[in-house]
Image (tube, rainbow over all chains, first blue to last red; front, side, top):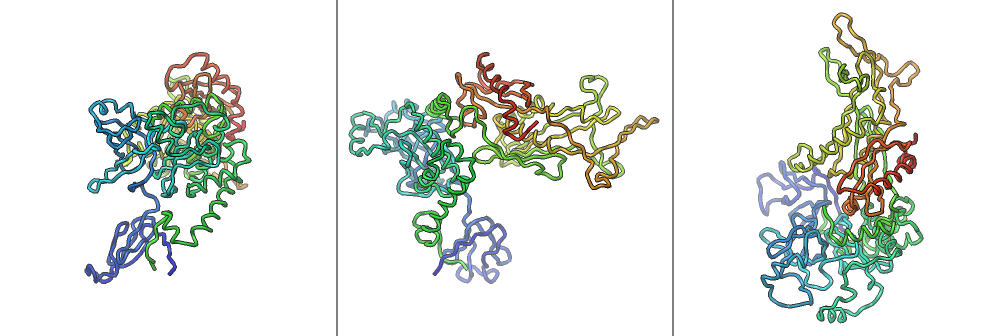
Length: 320
Length: 293
């Protein structure tokens, strides 16, 4: 059975509850989130995609605030330092909490946090620091968001700059830490729409993960985890700005931002000498748009199940 | 919005390299899309889109109207007083900046934005008050046009927006057309009466609306100073990484009409260097934005 995606606007008719004053099993359909009922007719109250589960009809908005799920990779900015936690802006409905117990101590120490740790919290992260983290949990009562950085690839990030895009364009993927096709440039794609583009000299080298852990346990900074400010060569600066501008173009065109779309855009702009031209040259922008749309059409839109697996959009049962 | 120490260092390194994060050189400007006449009901209007995310600024110009006793519109005029001899026989231009942060909605209103709005208004009144030769607005009998210029920004207010606002204002004044009027003074009552010409479109089908010259108009050019580096058209992030910002009101001939400092104190040499570069590039800047004299 072919799945259909139905997009509606506020006020569109999407179903009926059947006879008036009938409830429960006697109703044809039940009005769910994003809908309202008038005289037995169900209307959409949002612009979005209609979804039906059994008798329940709901409308999922096309644009919504970032709602984190457990396991999401996020890039955030520390907003405040509190008694035993940090508040982090992750572009969501509220600031996330990063507890002192949820971070890696220097040297990979595994111990109970002491009062001294609480007094030196700013040595770990201070206001305006940019960090990458994982969503550890969501409180079921008040939807508070808790982050964790208990992995060597999380924590404070440097040697780069941050970019904000529409979070709906960033799919939930297996790997959000990308080494793009430009030498020594890496990208962290936060599910929350915050992206970090940075100079990573180790990106072109293959280093065994066990070496990194060993170095961390010895209290040394391994290359991959070396996040001290370094001087950036000009060719890398050009690469960084090319990656940035390609992502900005993808955001403007409302195209998904993932490894293929970034690398394809870079491939199409390889001959461009001035990276700023990527933002203003219509031919370049059109070629990127055509290439990415062709890829999506070939690989996704003809097969809705893979669309759902990849998390691009959720398509439930048919709605006629 | 603030940046971390490492981000600030990164941006400052990029200024030293002469190659910014978005690929521009230090003195390179971002292109702007301008649409003239975006508000048909206004006498002059323009909408511009600028920045990576196409932020919008709309400017509309109209003489304030009121309905008179006989039901016909009455235009608000500026009657110069004998006491303000400097402004005698010149029209007035008033600026009103609004955004969703300062509007009436309780959901989007931000109190701190009122201060930024007032600063923007004061800068515009000070430096764009002479955007055109106000004597062109003079009619007769000590009566001249009073133009109300509404500047609308849908998003967040900041002082970084002064440069694009000035571009939108100049584009709106280029689009400005106002009707010809006849001013008469009643000899008995000394009341001034203003009437529109009967036919705005003449017998040959062309409109008789008047426009003003914008050849000597000024723009507000913002530059950031970071050590020895002068950064033109800084983005929001870059503005946080410079030592100070200068706002220079300049016309296409390179004549400086005013300078304002935003931020920390700056040495005279750095300021002189920044202003010199702006003066040298003045004509190119006007041509870049499509304001050819």
